[in-house]
Each structure stands twice: as C-alpha cells, then as structure tokens.
Image 1 (cartoon, helix red, strand yellow):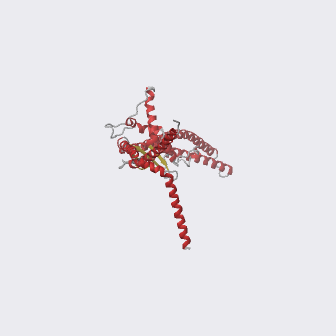
Image 2 (cartoon, rainbow, N blue to C red):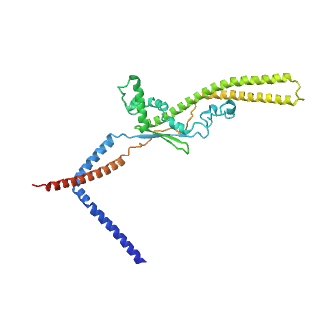
Image 3 (tube, helix red, strand yellow):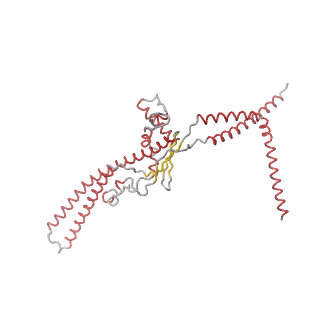
Amino acid sequence: MNESKESMTGSARANVEKRIDVLVYKYRPFLVHLWANRRRLFLINSTVATVSVLVLLFLVRPYFDSSVVILPDFGRSNAGVLSQLSGLASLSGLGSVNLSEGIPPEIYQNLLFSESVLSPVVYTKYQTEQFAAPVNLIEYSELEPDESLPPALRDRRLMLDFIEKFVGSMMRVNADRISGIITVTVRMPESRLSADVANEIVASLNRYVVEKTRDLARETMQYIERRLVDVKDSLTDAEEQLRSFQERNRSIATSPDLVLEQSRLSRTVALKQAVYVELERQYEIARIEQHKDTRILNVREEAREPVEKTGPRRYIIMIIIMLVSGTVTSLWSYHRSSVNRIFTSLRGREPA
C-alpha cells in the first residue's frame, strides 16, 4: 500500500515538473526579451508612474460621502388627514381612499430624484471652503450658461444640466425593499458640503410632502364642507318626517305597522346624525392638519461632517495603473520586436 502511494506521489510530481518545463519552454522567448529590454521597460514604466503620481496628487480632488437614513413609518400616518375616516368611508363615499397606511417608501425614493425636490437643493446657499461667501451648487460647480439659448431658458438649462450631473455621479439612493429603509448618500469634494447637501435633500423632500399633505387637507376640507351641507339637509328632512309622523300618530302602541314605521324613521335620523357628527369631527381634524408644520419623514439621524475622506484611494489606483502599464508595455515591446524580426527576414530574402 505504501509503495503504491509513493508511486502515485512520484507520478504526480513528475506531471507537475513536466508542465512547468512546458510553460518555461513556451514563455522563455518572452522572458528573455523582457530581460534584454529591461532598461527601456523600466524607463517607460517609471515615466508612467511619475505622471500618475503627479496627476493623483495635484489634479484628482478627494471626495467625501455623507449619508442620511430614512426609516419606515412603523404604522405612523403621514397623510393623517383621512387617517380616522376609515369608519366613515363607506358612508361618506370615500371607500376607495386609503391614506391611513402612510406614504410608501417607493414614493419617497422616486421623489428624491424629482425636479420638485432637487431644484430647491441646487439653489440653496452653502458655506464652502472654495468660496468666501455662500454659493449655490451651480455657482460652486462654476457652470457656464449656454449663450445659444434665449436668456429666459439659460438658468433652467443650467439647473437641469446640474441635476443630471448630480443624480448621475454625486447622489445615490438605496432602498431596502424588505425593511423599507432608504439611505441617501451625497458625494462632494468638501466634507461639510457633503453633509449640508444630504441634509438639505431630506429637508426639501419633507417640505414637499408637508406641502402636498396640506393640499390634501385643504381638498378634504372642501369635500367635507360639501358633504356637511348634503348630510345636514338630509338630516333635517329625516327629522321633519319623524316629527310629522309622530304628530299624525299620537297613539301607536296598538299598531305594529306604526311602531315599525316609527323605528325605521328613528334609525334614519340616528344614522344621519352619526354621519353629521363624524363629518364635523373630521372637518376639525383636517383644519388641524392643514396648519401643521411638523417633520413627516422619520429620519434616524442627520448627516454629519465626515472625518475621513472616502476617496480616491491613490495607492490602489497606482497599483492598477502600474499593472496595466507593465502588461501593455511588455506585450507591446515583445510584439514589436517580433514584427521587426519578420520584416528583417523578409528583406533578407529579396534578390540582390
């Protein structure tokens, strides 16, 4: 048994050595060429390394990432105008409206990329290290207007161009479908600016949602006012019918039909009274919601100025550059030498 194991080990070692010999024989001309041209390759790659270091140190600006986490509502109603109308919805014709569950996180995610939310962020003045006075993001980026456009459209073109650039390279939104948590990350050349812009994005989204909630409250009040008029009229008619019935029938105890009719009229009056009282209560709730100015988004923590830069990681970039440069220059030098040898041999075969 031991002898068989030793023979198997010896054969495996022989196979490995054979493969190594094949690889050495196959790539020996290439290795010999690299050694012969080591000075040229060293000079080229040293130049590439020097230029890369200068570019990374003086032309590539560092950047900082700041993040804000928006938590789900956990059952809290953002659109609280009709949150307590569930019991009245079927009676008042609002059965198709379902606002008591709050605003889904997917809506927040889509709104974060909208012009309505980002345009106030772009034009907000920020204190920066690059400028002494506060500037907006367009002024900070030093974008120039398109002179070919009419003057009325230049500012809007600038704003749309910056939003496209901002969404493409400076802003990232990650939404966890399972937990409903949304993370807004902003990348800027300055640490304080990245935190300020991230917080301003969330504040702009909150203002937008508050404004829309107030509009919804105003529309709800208008609807309830119309419903109150209708319900009050129908309640008055029902009360008048019950009063008239009782005046015409002073003694109804002996008549089952009259008792049944009185019960039906009384139920109608009680139902319309309940609807009227509930509408008045919801009207007051809508008035309160219309004048609310509270934070709707459930923000875990505002963005803070990052202590360390996010990137670029210059040493990793240098390693990648040198690996690519070494590979490209080695292959280029070897193939160039092979092509020269072919042309030399062809010229040597030409007749004298």
